Length: 353
Image 1 (tube, one colour):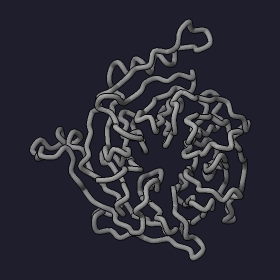
Image 2: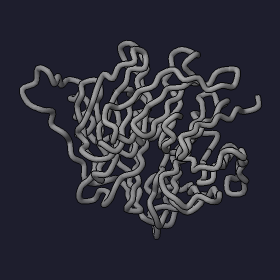
Image 3: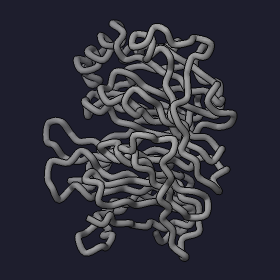
Image 4: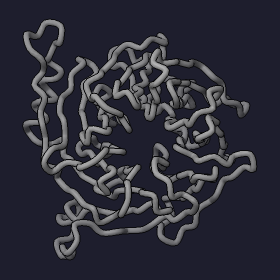
């Protein structure tokens, strides 16, 4: 991209209703947002570009969803200024703006089943849950037993019943969305009308996570993802760890030892990646794991391999790509991989079919 500044986020659209949308992705960096398409002839085609009016804005993250009533694609973006903006990709207009977080936002993630529910995490040590249909903040997770420093990453499980979060405090926390009071608050958020209401929506504050650990990593945890009932997480330690909280296994195996509240299943080791805010990705079907390092190399693992701990990575590299890879994205059909770098470049790799 022309600005030449770090691109911190890149995401393919998985919420498409038309086949032509399947290879559309967005990138964010500086005060710019770009939407591209991977064309069949191997090119990256620019479809739309946005520039924030504030030159000091620095976008860190983006997430795709769609408008439930029209199925039009929307893109949520946020960054250093702590303002969440919702762009309608069909009309090329910014349709919503949420300044409620108040400080830098490090990651956005939409609910896997409800396109209106959005989670945001950031510098305020909190996880915010939003209903973008009615422009309400539903709940805030954090406080006494919450994160003690910036929250860097967040993810919903595949059913949207749990949230996992990680941060600068070296901790990973699991939060449930299945409590009766939270389910009722989400329901009320759909009934609330900010235009006609006499008072603001009553936000639910949740200060106790279902699970918390500092046993996995000894540094900033900049990326965490659900992998079925397992969790994948990484720090600045040249390794992605696959592990499981014992609270998810006690019903399956009551004889498991309780000395630790989690246990490691396997590790995916790579090299030259000891700086933070380099995030890995899983493909749509969770068959492939990918991460980039600080010298422009991509490491890929096949998660269908029965013995994950002994599976070696496939390494992708190009002599002209030597900048840190901040984030990787894989298209829904698994045929295209793109990654965004510190020098403002975007690289495309195609899978041999």
